[in-house]
Length: 120
Image (cartoon, rainbow, N blue to C red):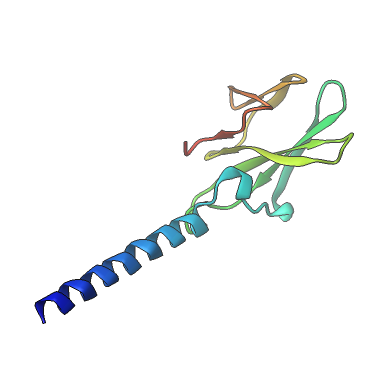
């Protein structure tokens, strides 16, 4: 009887931990897996050479959609390829291209080959 109780408790614990992991992944996606809400478009800025476009979206919240985040999506206009470049927790006040390979968001320099996620 004692052994069945311990096995039942262990199975319950494993199910609980697995559920927490699933909820964390569902409500706290990585930058590359983040769903963008296109109706939340805030701004769009062309690179100095005109080959890339950075579009900023208000994306609601990451955790249970209660907080505010902004996501920057980089599009290569020659190939049509898109990638999420950054996620920041506060209002995007100042966005500019520093060069064809680097942007500045709220005075934070972000190379376009290294995505930025404030949660990491």
